[in-house]
Length: 516
Ligand code: 6LW
Image (cartoon, rainbow, N blue to C red; front, side, top):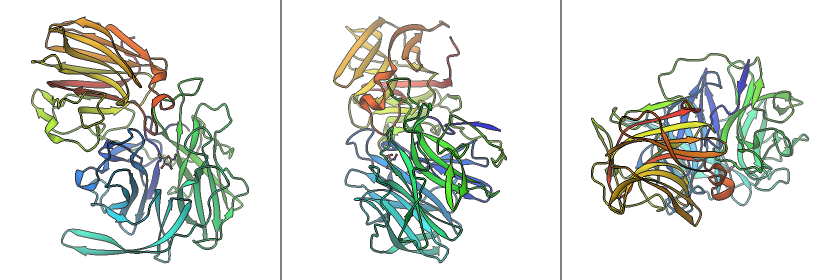
């Protein structure tokens, strides 16, 4: 069969995977977005459903408001050991930052509060050796390994796990010489210890390298075929592949998940963030060989007969699928995020829809806003928001935005200008900010539409009784890209209100342009 990469499209970087029987669980980074660490389940490695978020409570983590798109929840690792699921991760920046793990016996339920660990740096991973010892690997001034003493107790509230002791940091192998050796994962396979890294930085020179040893703390022998995975200096459409994690399926075949990007065109600029890819792995001379023909590359289409083909029926959210939210379930659709820990007072579910209570913060403000956002998962998409704003004053505004960060966003909004209700299209690219169109519009309710393509984001509206959207503005996609003004995340589609209350009655997101 043939499968297509990415297996999880849009901003889903730094994937980590584990298998429990015939079930695979996969987690990705989430940076400043809340809830943190989206968690996915699959039985065939290609079809994924989102089963929740690992960090779903304010008590588990506090996100810093510094440096949008660059800080927050980085690179997690998910592992399963003796009935317990562990996820170890870094909250980067702010006084609450640091490395910690959370755990659960039920990945569909709540995860524990954090168990903080005294290590600096990023990209933590856990390895459970077959002699009962547990090791941490991470990256600070270099890649290191340290033993952890974890103690598990069972009480009235289920299991409790604490870390009683951490061993010295051992710098065993720092990669093949590329910059930014990071994301170390340890494995024991056929009696050998393997230490797999990313090198070259998360941009276009990204790669995966590996070394092995007979002893967990080394000495490590580098693979003579390093890098074992990279798309650097190729014409492949997927670029910057790296940051991989290995998994063996129930049939004894091996796979890696990794991240990669799909630029809009040339020159390379990407707006979907770093996405999750699946790579076949075979073994030669005791080394993992990655790629469809063992070529150490990741293609958009991969032909393989080896997938554990056990697709499942899911009534959960399938990432990359179309979505309609009537805001009538009383809870948030799993694809919605807030930026930073949410202020729950800003969101009110009613039988008429979701009321956003504007808190005076507009899209350019780097603080908690009355906003919900979801990932842009396709180059070509159509998003629509049916919005009612009854009372609106001159400083009030509610609308639909394509949002990279507070300094890079385009939007269509209902507002008041010169004491008249109107629709505006505004764009901000760095320090340039302009309202580019103003249309008088005197009704309370409007359907706002945002379409995306590789070239352009286009804004349109439908007034009461209208069926055909009227385009009132557009902007280049290339200026809302990581290379222009972002860092580690991808673009989001946001519904928001500033200095007003606004009722969101329906939101839809569809791949493609159904109106075209
Ligand atoms: C992550 C590092 C990386 O911590 O990017 O691509 C950093 N790899 O391993 C942020 O995602």
